[in-house]
Image 1 (tube, rainbow, N blue to C red):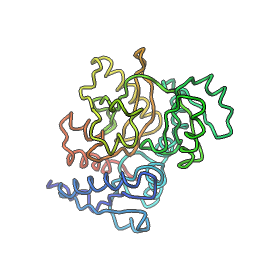
Image 2 (image 1 turned 90 degrees about the horizontal axis):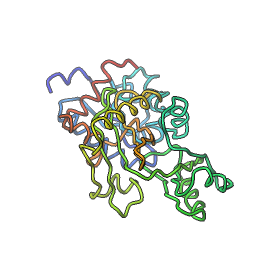
Image 3 (image 1 turned 90 degrees about the vertical axis):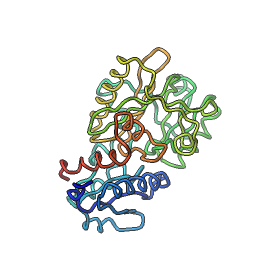
Image 4 (image 1 turned 30 degrees about the vertical axis):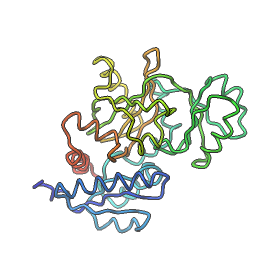
Length: 308
């Protein structure tokens, strides 16, 4: 790509210290190689191994840090301080998007449909929680992505083990109403929704969990997604409102469900989605004509119009 020089020297930030380090290493390596193939002067930068003060030697940053430290506003704040343009969502939107409860509160306040939930601890009286949410529920750490620490709970006696698993990753844990239905994901590029993908994990998987996301090859990805044209447009419009409500920018992804009555429910937002061979944003972008290299350059181009 002849005009790659306009980007200058690019730090591809990946690795980091979160529970999603392994995924970030895969994603970041893929992005780095794509930018290099496109003629961009890109270099790997792992904040676990290097001081962020060394970023002063770069012209811009492509953030592929998943989870805490990279997706929660921390690295975005460092880059703002260094006046270095970076990809994706800013400090506030990143901090909100990484917090599943804050995200839900904003969506609820914006009259956007999201599954009912309760914050719980191992000492919570579960009777009112079960009375309100019903069973099954899904237990989630509030500040993790990639389905880390999640469990489906079908019986009251299974709560304790699920809460214990989630608290290994986060001090704050939520129980969310289980929605039976079809799962969809909606990716964004340049702030606009891409074609909807339907996620169909194999029958032996309770939900689209970490293993299904990154390690299995038998998850089906439906493009087209099986919705009518009107339903797909409605879901894209809903998710665009949800994306903008939390302050997300540029590129990202929202996961949603359609229940058996046909209602859509927002699950969560990802402001630095995966960019591996299994990942969903590249699949959605491919459906509108972007190969992986073109997608990475398009995301990086957002830094040319965004002043840090």
